[in-house]
Image (cartoon, rainbow, N blue to C red; front, side):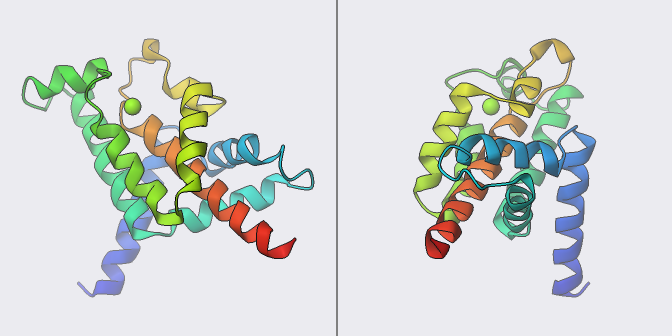
Length: 166
Ligand code: MG
């Protein structure tokens, strides 16, 4: 398989898995809007979406999506060994590896992403609230942090690009 073909498959799969797990580009764009609208009154959802698309085109981000979702799914299927299975299933606060994977996404666009990520992780608007609903029967221990991190990275990207324009 050529290197180019492999890249394509990674991106395509990462996007498919996000969708399969109930997360759309629009959902993430809405989080970006939530984070940035107060600073940029002219901002529209289309611009948020464009920035989410650019973040999703990064290989580091695709790798994080694949790894995180795979662990969530294997947890649902009971296919991980103990004690890891229960730790991820319970989304234990002291585990923290889900946040570390999220940081690999935020790092792509520099440090202002950290603030955005911390804020959105506390507020849990929109899709993040849904992903955190433990009564759904799904395990989104990794996915909630990944989605928050993609939104935070897209917000940083957007803020940088608007700062140039203004
Ligand atoms: Mg988590």
